[in-house]
Image 1: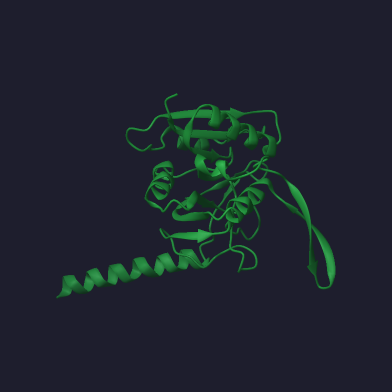
Image 2: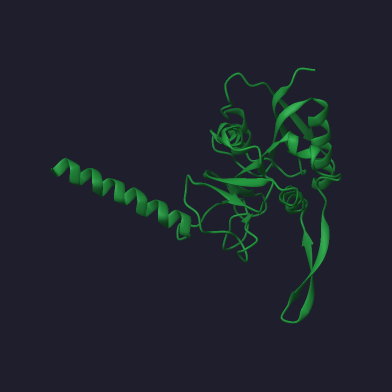
Length: 237
């Protein structure tokens, strides 16, 4: 069976789609000489949908599987960039992910490091860096990783964590469960700092993204300012 280059897995959640989401997917750039197939699931919870999408991607012999949630708007070069990251990485890198933020008053990137409490902020725009977990709303996966994982690949679980001497029950989402499994199997997850995706909330009718006063944005503003100053200095000379 011929291999499909990229399977685009979309777990539709039943919410209204923003026109920008559809336009972004329609105009997305794909790697050259790469076939694509869309694998969508409706009417199921996201955990079941992701597992079914993986099963179908296996059956269709996909090389990579790109998960795209129906509220994440991707930049045009997203699929190319995430695929390129996997293509150029060592064999121990199995996942590359774009970055989107929580739908909260103080949006935070849905990327995490085990050695850092809360969201991971210590990175730069355009930087590709290691993380231990991320949301799967804009995530490219090398299908070979599933040869090393047990089913179900995605599962929503519960765990207790000690907080101030008390055991507090926490929900572990299906994508964090998957990332933990990938890391436990000895593989790496790369986050791509050039792929910043607006995250749409249909109830509030607004997009959430990196705050302007966040560390990555301030670093990028400072970098651009330094470039302009250097160019002005050269011009004066």
